[in-house]
Amino acid sequence: MHFVSKCCKHFNFSFYQNGKKTTGDTYLAFLKKIYDHRTEEYSDWIFATNLETIDLDSIMMHYKMRTIIEIMFRVRDECRIRTESKHKEVIFLFTYEQLVESVWYLFYHEEVSFKRFLIELSSVAAR
Image (tube, rainbow, N blue to C red; front, side, top):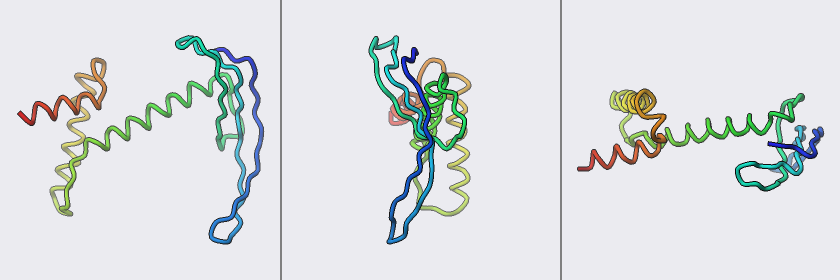
């Protein structure tokens, strides 16, 4: 990524919730005219963070990694089998979910996404 303009500003905010005023502060990173080599387009980005020091040259990479991690947790949650039981079955189901994720990581993570792995696994199990 190529940055034409970048800066960071401290921002104080306040809002009312349930009749009570709440205040806080954040840091805003402004990146203007970022060139994306994949799409060959320019775009502007604003990031909000609680970090006082921000490396504006690598913030895009950090947020991409964070997004990948959050997506992985969301997809992993889709693997969980739903149950109304509050007993030993819950431990079994958690262990099963961990086993499925481990099999994917050990053998298939370079070939297929975890979500695709779950879809293919469920189609095989349905036969």
